[in-house]
Image (cartoon, rainbow over all chains, first blue to last red; front, side, top):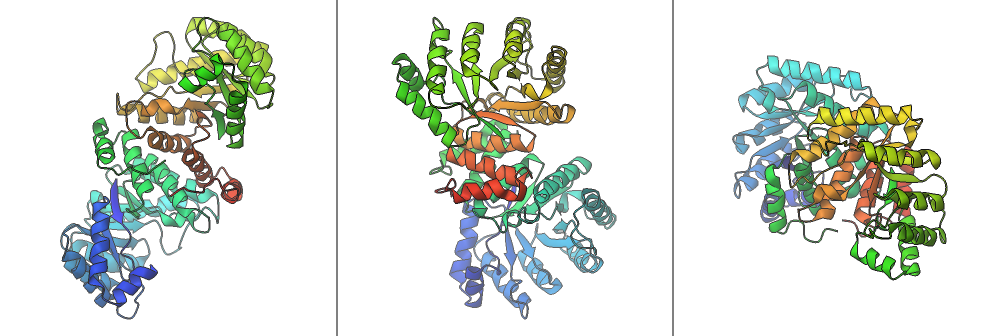
Length: 267
Length: 267
């Protein structure tokens, strides 16, 4: 499982304050804690600052780069903020995100090529979010086809099924899992990715739902997730699921996680 | 999810002692605690007493029946113990278990018919445990065909894929999940069931593995499980998975579980 640590996100109140106050030490600390907990990438988002997002993005990436060379997932609705972030992030970055919306596609594709970045591709187009499995798979087919035509290698594409809250419609969990399973079947070389927290919106004990959903998504072929790596139960569930799904030879990583105390305190 | 409480099992040291000492109150207490925690059935096993198993089974079932009418899952390798247990258990019992082994099949089938019981059907025959998915599915096809020929309705059959420890071979988790998924696809009216604890044998933090495996199995179509309903994290994961898999309309049961305090203390 590819873990993208989600915590450096300006839509979180605490993080927004750290960015406004240019609290270098606090951001470094959150970066290092996520890496220590097992993150493979760090997501970086300054999107809450509409007026001067690129400037905040620049400060965030420079701050993170002063303590770690971990690859970054540059997360923005703004072309300019993506460009600044990617330039400073260096190699092996992920762009969060492209989609089938024509304007978004045309703006982001040049950045994917310029920085040889990977890219999270959202399963939507100009029609917005879709409820029908075949329509969603149609959007994904077209998006993958177009990215391949535009010379983006399959292994640099992360399809995001765009999970919606089960509190708004109980089919949404199953719909996302079926989409993940079908994308994995049709495109074994393309990766899948998702954010975890949407699914639980509007319900109590959201962490429990996110932890549980993560395991169902792994069982359906999920390759990467944007999540909170400081959630110990979640990370333990991921280690256990990898062992159970045959993705951890001789259960070596599971045993190592146990030895290094990562499962302590779990019931 | 159909929860079969596993705790009244004589192979557990504490339970064995309670049975030997005819500790009526302790057995009643374990029965009631499992029901309170959400069990739909209670498994009853006196198999550790080879010499006089039917007598112990009789005492166990009578003791349980003195406090509850919950349906029972009568669990024994012995025809006589099954017969005594089923007679005292009353309606809607489950027999644990039949298999494709000719002798077992011929001994247990008359009990299934006599008591109009449901039956757990183990995915094995005279060749013992199998490693090949197609061979396993062949055993299951024959077993279901024969049970139907022998007038056992589909909805009273619980196919158990016989999960083996991932510590002995990392494919065993996936093999069981693929079997569950395929049985669910081929036989939508037949139920599936499994024991949870085998999968984690030989590894540390077995509860974590069992909790995680349960969710992957639910995502693969599992309908019933023999498990410890007093494991709060496990039961919370099951409630969450039902909400996420669209098996809990409007998330009503999930919300009710939260309101009644079942998620308290979880991280």
